[in-house]
Image (cartoon, rainbow over all chains, first blue to last red):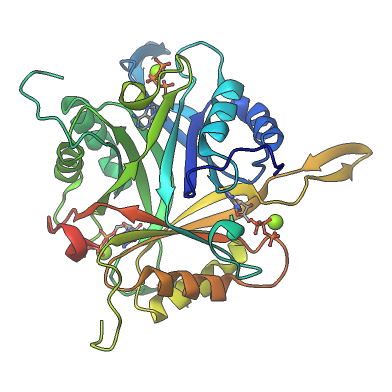
Length: 123
Length: 123
Length: 123
Ligand SMILES: Nc1ncnc2c1ncn2[C@@H]1O[C@H](COP(=O)(O)OP(=O)(O)OP(=O)(O)O)[C@@H](O)[C@H]1O
Ligand SMILES: Nc1ncnc2c1ncn2[C@@H]1O[C@H](COP(=O)(O)OP(=O)(O)OP(=O)(O)O)[C@@H](O)[C@H]1O
Ligand SMILES: Nc1ncnc2c1ncn2[C@@H]1O[C@H](COP(=O)(O)OP(=O)(O)OP(=O)(O)O)[C@@H](O)[C@H]1O
Ligand SMILES: [Mg+2]
Ligand SMILES: [Mg+2]
Ligand SMILES: [Mg+2]
């Protein structure tokens, strides 16, 4: 981290984003550029505020209510969590409904398993 | 949200539930009815407090210790998190061991990617 | 829990670990030994602080940047979260890069679906 970066509020944060699967590559690049390259990715499905959509398949009506998404989790300490949120939200944006959400949760402590380091140094 | 709903404590909350896979449809319906239709779903496996169960397959003994479950995550702001917890717990209940758990975690901030809205309006 | 166990700070905690998949069995054993056998497991992929690795396959260069990992989540109340973190970190350790991380997050409340128990008794 360069000297000109602002510190965050001192806490460790979990930035959790639910994004479109085809935006993962752009989000990874954006995270690396903002100095927070570490991340954990899961396949999830979900729905936002749109009502479930009725579709037809071979004459049968069915309801599409869960869409494939990707969850990206970044635990950060040195880089302000807001910068990480902005980087993800920029990279994940298309302007169409379904672009996703980004949340920040507090983290109380961290351990790096290989080194045994704890706290901010472990993130 | 109708005028008669109670506000929550002002904070954004993550309601995280681990439920039986075959209760997901009922839980989705219950969430929509309580006014919190947005959710993220993941496939997980897990164990609760029961000791691992020894079984046999073609004469070989093996231990079943992780059961397929579904994780449901709902971030809520306008609807009290306790109402969401109650809706999930009611819908997921069978009375048999293995029905699952529901937890509430604090969330510090939220962004809706499409609109850039932040805070309670983004949830 | 025996009388000689130390209480934790009174709060419910989520211990979230990202570990090597082939360490899951050892981590489950360690958790049971420390008195916290309940857990939820997800398949995830991720990267830590190492730069992405360039590899070749049939003459094509490609970048390996996400490694298969397992996420283990344990919500604990009676057992100190730090003991759970130490048990996981010990069991997951190889000394090679990529051993993973363990984080503690605060949890505000818990419900056991079968019994309706709430709070520390529900964990
Ligand atoms: N409140 C929420 N709780 C849990 N998951 C959510 C929530 N809101 C959105 N998600 C997750 O994010 C994904 C994308 O949500 P989405 O972008 O459709 O939100 P939205 O509020 O409907 O916004 P938009 O109007 O732009 O579609 C959902 O499929 C779901 O997995
Ligand atoms: N303390 C916990 N930490 C993490 N995950 C948990 C915890 N307790 C339960 N789970 C998850 O919830 C699933 C269902 O748990 P389960 O309902 O069996 O809990 P229980 O305490 O054993 O209650 P019951 O006696 O009704 O079976 C587990 O498979 C696991 O994925
Ligand atoms: N800050 C983080 N945020 C989110 N996930 C992380 C973070 N750090 C590590 N992880 C997850 O843990 C996995 C293992 O990380 P890893 O052990 O390589 O961390 P590291 O800091 O690079 O340590 P080491 O130098 O020992 O490799 C990653 O693949 C990723 O899924
Ligand atoms: Mg939507
Ligand atoms: Mg059980
Ligand atoms: Mg690494």
